[in-house]
Length: 557
Image 1 (cartoon, rainbow, N blue to C red):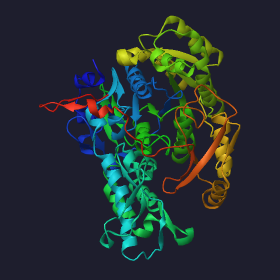
Image 2 (image 1 turned 120 degrees about the vertical axis):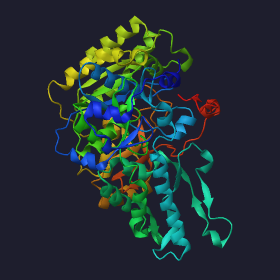
Image 3 (image 1 turned 30 degrees about the vertical axis):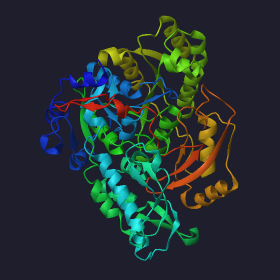
Image 4 (image 1 turned 180 degrees about the vertical axis):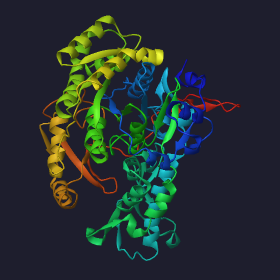
């Protein structure tokens, strides 16, 4: 069966009953959206503050390939397996964006027999969080142009407005636009553009905020543009927009509860881009799960050079989180791809390509152990075409690196197929306590932070930028020097070139643009040609998604 067919046949329990049964959460603390999804009240979350935290485990992956690695599927399968072994475990996932759902990547509810449900709801409108984020973002956009139209008392330079508009859909036609056409009644025409909702700073703020008041304060710090001559930044609070933006988000900030196919409670909340932002689910969901469960498994976007680095250096730093271990997900297919094999030949055994592609896994493992300072368990996400010889090669190579590679069959067998992985994770996490390290320190300059990531994590020889960008970074260092750095680059490679696979070294990372995410609290350094508004492929997934007369959806994956 397809993923959606498996999900539609799931024996779901009412979310109110499940929350009471597994975690003692009374119905009064839940705001149900139908029978199988609900929001958890902030008042209840506040009541948990004195409880001891559980242990936090991060699921990440090798550099993504067209073959896929299955990070979300592994997170779900591992959580179900640990619960099967009697360990009180909760998973925390990101919400899917509609853009990839209707584009090429698909949804983000897992796959096979390791999914969260209701799958269709999660992958489509869910509880309306992304709509609220889009609306809050676009309200601020409207207030910027409205302020300029009605006299511009803040002296905003229309040429220096940095706040775009957003929509949660892949639409390349909106990347660059001219707004306010049609005459004086419509305002002053200026260049503008759209980002996808998950690239909005509102999304990043939403996922890093620790309370409704923290959310409102962060929204007020958003920089929307600059006064004439670039003299002073103009903030959302200057436009008196942050209160109404927070009002639009007051319900969205409450984390969402759903369940796995095996009826284990799960949080799915927030979903920032792992390029332009930090690529992790909300701090609120993660910290709440840590108060409820003994073990919490969460994921971070893309490979360990992006998602895991930002999880450590941005999310953990800001939220005071202390991860205990990392699970690094890989597949034989993806490793062979990094060994130079084209996508249509990945199901055939090729030990030479596999051995070559292991360099990518080895780089990520070394980064996790050396630079993040955390123990790492390798999960080989199993496919039916994997051969015994391939499995033996990977396990032997990983053993020489001081780690273990565990075969996990959660896609086919659910939690039962991930029990070996779960036992190893429990053994590592319950063993010697780990203490993570940051890749750079708060007091390092912005340029030195960028260099630390590029050289330590990406294996780069140097970081370059033109004179204007270097001067901009030096200028930003005066006011924002203590901010973490979020490098936005391709997820497909350790370099800024998506075509360079494996584990390249001695390359150059060129910073082409720098942005201030003042509300989120980090500096975005863009390397290479990063798009914040994707386009649809020639044959988008939307062509195959349908609904029948009974309302049953097909084609989602």
